[in-house]
Every structure is written in C-alpha cells, then in structure tokens.
Amino acid sequence: MTTDQIILFCLFGAVFGLLLWGRFRYDIVAFSALMAGVVLGVVDSKDAFDGFGHPATLVVALVLVVSAGLVRSGAVLLITRTLIDSSRSLGAHITLMGAVGGILSAFMNNVAALALLMPVDIQTARKAGRSAGLSLMPLSFATILGGMVTLIGTPPNIIIAAIREESLGEPFKMFDFAPVGGVAAIAGLIFVALVGWRLIPARDDGGISADDLDAYIAELVVPEGSKQIGKRLSELEETADKADVTIIGLMRDGKRRYGRAQSAELRAGDAIVLEATPDALDEFRSTLDLAVAEAERENRLRADGEGVEIIEVVVKAESRLAGRSAQSVGLAWRQRTVLLGISRRGHKITTHLRKTVLEAGDILLLLVPRDTGDDVTEWLDVLPLANRGLAVTENSKVWLAIGLFAGAVVAASLGLIYLPIALGIVVVAYVLVKIVPLSELYTHIEWPVVVLLGSMIPLGAALQKSGGTELIAGSLVSLTEGMPAWAVLTVLMVVTMTLSDVLNNTATTIVAAPVGIQMAQTLEVNPDPFLMAVAIAASSAFLTPIGHKNNTLILGPGGYGFGDYWRIGLPLEIIIVAVSIPAILFFWPL
Image 1 (cartoon, helix red, strand yellow):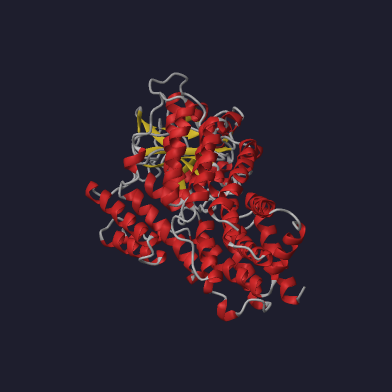
Image 2 (image 1 turned 90 degrees about the vertical axis):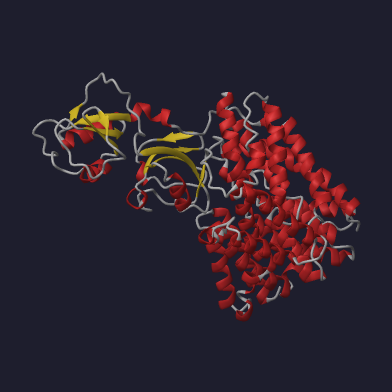
C-alpha cells in the first residue's frame, strides 16, 4: 500500500469507529476527517469543498424543502387524514399504513414520511387500546423500504446516481431503481404486514402522558406570616431546582392563575402547584416553611391549566436537546417551557429532569405557554407525537404543489431537465407562491446531513484516486474467486448491509459504490448490477436503532429495547437479499 492509501484507510477507520461510538455527531466527525485529510495532504485543498456543490448534496437538500412544501400545502394531509380508524384489525392497519408510508417515502424524504405518519399511528393505537410498539416498527421499516424505489427516495440512491455519472458518464434516472427496489420493497412490506409484526415482543407503550404525572402533582400553601409573602413565584425556582421540584402554577382563591404565574407576588393562602416526588416535595416544603394543602379539594389538580398546555414530543438525533439537558439549553428561560417527564425506551424518568442528559428517541412531556407548542417544537427541532394542526396554505395550493412536483418528476424522468435543476425550480416556485415561506426555507434542510455529504464526498474521491477502492475491490474479488456472479453480488450486499446496520448509510454508500464499480471492472462485467446491490443494501438498515434515523425516532415511542430490532430486521434483511439478487440479475444483466 502507498502512504496516501494508508492515511486514507486510517481516516476512514477513524470515521467509522467514531460513528459507531456515537459520542460525536456524524457531521462533526466527517468534517474533521476532511480537514485532517487536507492537512495530511491526501485531499487537495482546491478540492476540499467540492462535495458541498456536488449534485448529490444539492438533491438531498432540495428534496427536504420539497417534502416540507408538500406537507405545508396540505397535499399529504389529503392522504393521511382518512387513516385514523381504530376499528381496523392490527394486521389491516399495518398493511394500510405500510403501503401509504412506502408510497410517500418513494417521493419524499423517508424521515419526513415517518415524521408525518408516526403521530397518526400513535393516535390510532391509543384509540384502539393497544401498544403503539406493535405498529411503529413496521411503519418505520415500510418508510425505509419505500425509499428504495426512486432516485429521490433515499440519500444512498442519490449518491449512487451521482457516482455513476462521474464514473460512467450518465446517472441513473428517476425510476431506474424501481424494478429492483420495487421487488425488494413489496417483498419486505408483505413480510412486515403478515409476519413481521408478530415477532415484536409485547411491551408497554413507551409514551408518557399527563395521567402519568397524577401521583406527582401536589400543592403547598403559603401560610400567614411566611417569609415568602411578597416574593415573586420565579424567586423560588432556585430552591425548587435544588430540591428537584418543578413549579408549574399558582392557585389563588381556589382558581388557577393564568399561565405559570411566574411574575405573581405571593400572598398568604396562595397554593403553589408543583410536580415532585414525596421526598422532594417535603424537602421543598421544609426549606421554605410552607404548609401542606388540605387533603380534600373540589378541583382535581392538573399540570396544565389556563394559559398553558402539555405537548408530547420525541427527541431527534439532530435536535437541540440531543446530548444536552433541558437546563443547559435554557428551556425554561428561553422558551418559558417546563420539562415534566421523560420516557426512555419504555422507562419513565420523573426525577432530576432538568439535569438529565437527553438522548435521541427520548419522549418528553413539556408544559408550554398555550398556542406556542409549534414554536417550541420547531426551536427544539423535536418531533410532535400528536397532530399539531400544522400550518397549511389555502386549499387552492394543494393541487398546485402536487402539480409542480409531479411536473418536475416527469421532466427529470424523461431527461428533459437535469434533476437538481428540476427540484431547484420547484423550490423557487414554492417560495414564490408562498407554499414554503421564505423565512422557513433553510429551516427544513438537515444541515448535518449536508455537511456529512459535503465532507465525505471529497474523502471518497481521494480514496478512489489513490487506488484505495481498487485495493478493497481486489480483496473482495479474491475472496469470491471461482464463485458464480450471484454469489459475488451477495457478498457485496451482505458486507454493505452489515456496515449500514451500524454506520451512517450515507458514509457507507460513498465507500461501497466505488468499490462495486471497481469489482465489476476487475471482473470485466457490467457495473450497474453492483451499484444496484449497493443501493438496496445501504438502505436495508433494520438490525439496530442506530442504523437509520427512522429506527432511532421510534425507539422511545415504541418502548423498544436495542435488541428488539433484529427479531424482525434479520429475517427482513435475509428476504431482501434473497429477492434482490435474482431481480438484479434479471433487470440489470451482467
């Protein structure tokens, strides 16, 4: 091996190791590796930022904006608003939701498709009186499967099309993935709907609701002569924090004060509404010399009240809260929001809430000022677990949004216009007709994904230029020497699929696609079957909650454990390999 190859292999090894560790976010890891590559001389400084203008990066960003436009216009609501029917059997519900999720994710970002359908699925489960965990995993897998069918359905397909253009002179078209991806998606959906959901262990719902807080809601009364009289309620926050107590409101003369009443001056007889365990409540009471409220009260205490409401959200990997605590992001003073409860993998956390470091997949119960739930959710970049009444434009723009997007898809499919340009025109049109407000244009782009792609593409190009991909391909060819073509493709799929289960599928694709092309050239066969094998395998991340963002999103709401995924994911991956290899050899002959 050459010096450049050794350095690049070490860099990629460090990237994969850090991604597997998960201590640092993937975009920081990738960008750091890119900078290291420049400093070490294996990436030319003039090429260092080529990835940020790469067609694959642009298409991924534009698809996210287009997806947001379709949601905001109400186009997707036309499909989803008829789905909540708790009278359907579980199998019928999973079949319907899986089909809709698969179709949506073929034409919009599959994470966005799951984010849209997950609240629908959870509401249906609650109405039917069953655990959402029985249907959320099938829904997640269905949205991943649907993304395999089109060019824009998932980032690996976009990357592979761009790599094919660079290596072979022409990209894959919009529906070139449909024959193989469609076969894999249909086979996967049939398995998930008929058999897969039966393999999910029975678990309690991973959610947390206001009813779960009943045992922790109490009140303490300000007695006559108390030192707290005349103080503002907000002045008690420091003591409350030390005692692990949450102040959520104030009652005066038997009536709940508006909002959290933080600026109200305390009077004798005021009742402070709190959320706390018995021990914490007693510590807070004794510290401030407050009195215990009457045992019997006419009005049942609640966390929410006039001026405030409770929302339920799930933390995404890119959320402002991921890896941080509510206290460190200033949730209370920046958004006037109180964290009431946390559910992590089915286990409820109700102590030391503000200081608990939050993880992707955690479900949070938040007390927010009334009618600010959407703003708080957007600021935190979390996913609501109930329909929020998303702001949509007037109904006349529904068909305009659909028509603009459909026109771009048709034009790109027929080769009349380059796909990034077609999507760019749709984004501009959405802004001009106010389907997507200009002020929200950039908030819909997942910048960590853009940075990941922009950083990994130059590193992948450097690996290929140095002969590193040829070296990997040669090793795989030697390993499969004497095997039939289907066996070679199977080895490539299994290796790629295994990497995608534990690493980011974008990073996996950037390395695996050039290796597939090099293997084909070494064997002197058509490279397209190898690219298709990589495309299907890179998207087939079903064994772990970290292999795909959709799997992470359902971790908390479904109450799943880390080991629950492989029960349905392993047979699903075996089925995908089994049906994809014959389909590849049939539709893309060697």
